[in-house]
Image (tube, rainbow over all chains, first blue to last red; front, side, top):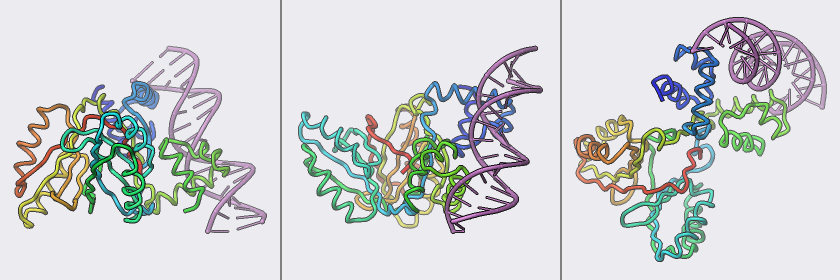
Length: 146
Length: 146
DNA sequence: GATGAAACTAATAGGGG
DNA sequence: CCCCTATTAGTTTCATC
């Protein structure tokens, strides 16, 4: 991947709908040349997905939390992993190393949804013995495209 | 925002480059009607940005960590906030409530970059007295568009 | 990688419920 | 206010060099 591809990706990170003709002007390449490079970036799975970033507040999601989770037995891990990612409020899930086993980012409408999530969903998954919830007060930076 | 708008956004979350004509078929509306709704979602800042999701591994970023940071004096907060978001490796930064003050998600090429980030960048910001780094081993879910 | 023709897609105008 | 059709303008794709 050369500097031209980097510049194409840069343009697309800013605006995923940037047209090949717009990008063409920025990188001094013909439109078909740009399209070909974009196609290769897609085929090579460098570009995984085109998407939109929505305004969470305006969509009604006012609460963002990080929840650390501990799983008590190895035999329960598979079930936990399969179940947790199915919840739409769980927008991120990582296997981590440290005091806890998993780290979740959970997006909710309000605190009653949080109560429901922790009490009725998370805690009911077999193996979840301990969790620690951290409230995110404000977002200073969130670059979703790196 | 009605059910049609929800379906338009749903299509765009899956594929930010979904054309108005494609969406038009899904929601049983004419192309101009779809375009008009999209324009309103953009103008109302419901749609904040169109972007691409890139393959981090293939871009050379093999290391993802979460770093919790404590700031020792209120007077140092402004400087910290302004400085930390300027680092391109800091892809997310949240003000949180709990044991620590800030939570960062940091994307790096390898552990030497992490060493450099913590030792030369993070720790050199005035007011940073304590930090805690959590290594993310694997990503089970990461919905960048919610 | 560039050019030019053909196909596709979007934007706009005009009109109706 | 929202939607439709028809027209016009713009963009991409394909073939060729």
